[in-house]
Image (cartoon, rainbow, N blue to C red; front, top):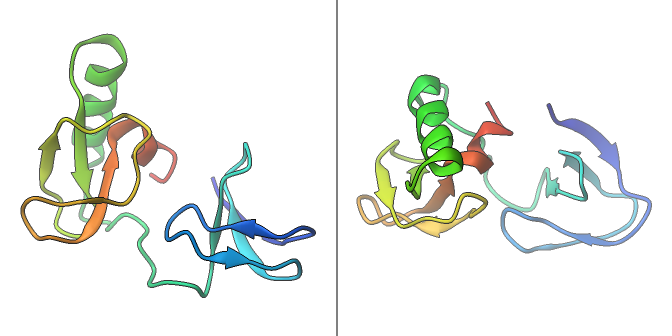
Length: 108
């Protein structure tokens, strides 16, 4: 679960790569993963994303041979995506919103 923090040090938004200066508000997901709150459009998973689909894809990539990613913009699946990928281009809609299934688990 994310929490909103005020940065003590400069950092980089994991979602869009923008520089975040100390004193900026950011969403913190642990392990140094920070996302700016004002540097880009809100790209959190759409509530319409099927949680069961995300969980099944993450399970397959962890215990099987799957490498499925899911687009946060349109919900389409895409093969050949690293489990921790974020911001890859979607083959269906062209948005840079494809995330690996394991990465999406952190945001459900």
